[in-house]
Length: 368
Image (cartoon, rainbow, N blue to C red; front, top):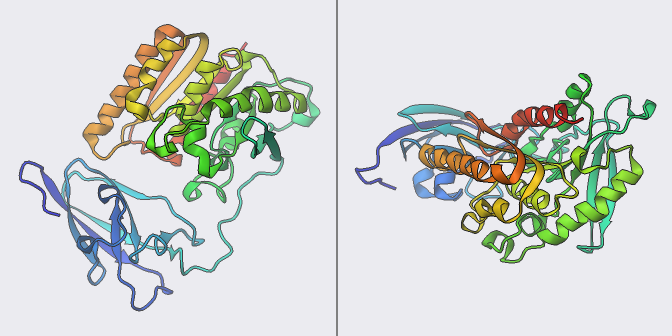
């Protein structure tokens, strides 16, 4: 689409390479965040492996290649969903794009698991939600030979925490590696990764009525499950430090909202909250008032945001400022605030993986 003269633009040239098993009659398209990931826009059609397209300067462009549909999107080396490519549009540039596979063509065995030995998989029933949750529990090296009781971090979106095979686009948080490194320094903990109910993520994680959860929230029941069903189960099965000071929950995006809501509404259970890139926009920023309405004077609160989380550099900067404002407004109502900015970080698992070790160290090193 043409852009009005008041919006500076820059031409981006995409040079495409495709795998040998690509169908001979294939047509290729660029799908981007700026077009809602529409998979077959005429203006995004490659001709002889080349596409020249104009985008606004300052756009935080994320993109993939398709053959005209969501089903024929490019994949990773195993034919599974791959992460978005991304670039900041600053001026004219050329991008070489090498497609590894097509998700509808590749017939491999799928992405291999990276789940480390010793991570226990539990199925825990929630009477609050009348459903089962898959829960993964990591214990540090030497746990079985020790009698030490350990602090516990509960993580939302548990499918993304340890295993590339189940993680979104094959990018896990590698939380076990981060925790193992700290355990070697004498800062050991347990990690409890709570798997998402895919059809209920918005309702379980967001306590407000929004379009993404069908204007119905099950967040109160989900947080009651964590606090009153799952935590007692974990405390009975493992050598935990069950006190509030040694119990934390964390998550990203909607999972960051869940962490904020859960720790602020159950301050008797949770001593620390990790809100990675929390979706503070939900219900027109209602979360900005939430801490004031639910003071938790003994809560230690970690909040962060990357500088590339948005459609444009300008609104990404505004999102960082909004998160900073949330932290500043929350400070009088909690014990401690740790606000971090992820320079150059996008809204994705690699960014949260890179920031997790800092959060873990801050949490553990201050425990008595």
